[in-house]
Image 1 (cartoon, rainbow, N blue to C red):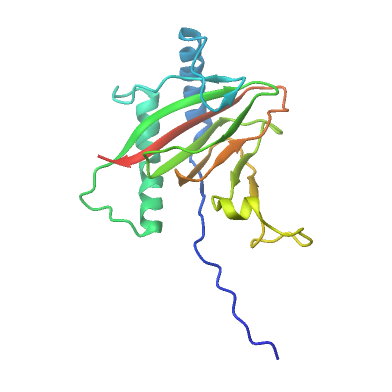
Image 2: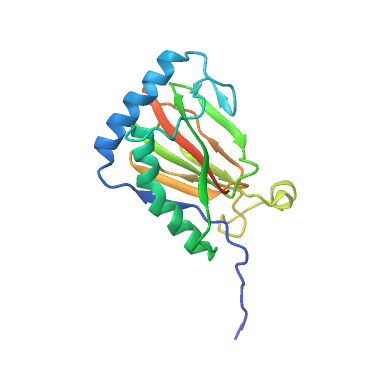
Length: 200
């Protein structure tokens, strides 16, 4: 009898939530984001290849849709901190910055990470079918550069994981995880809000 143990060590988590009443929330967020695009048609060039990247949202405006959104997601951020076993009482957890990306047909985002933050996130305002999966690469560089031929794909040899997303989904993950967005093949806009979380 083969008596062996496999320790699956150092897991890399991505937390996925579905926001309640996301349809109404997304209508207002979409309106706000398209207004930002109208005011700043060029946008920023970051990880986006094609597509439009907004400047950072003004989060301090009370009763604005972006402020309502930050209030809505506070419980999810807190839940991630608790799952990690991090201290939350009397800790000034803060959203460092928040922005939107609109990917049109054929647009995508190259591999990147978010330095100087603990957590990063992606929230899906508009996500038609085939609009581009969220993809995470293994952060262990050795696993990406040196390996035998893979015969049976499994969780011990996987190098890239694609996550299906839909409207109202909120993904929260460690900021150091390398991630990218697959090409939008939907023929429609894909709208995502991203943000970083730190401690003041």
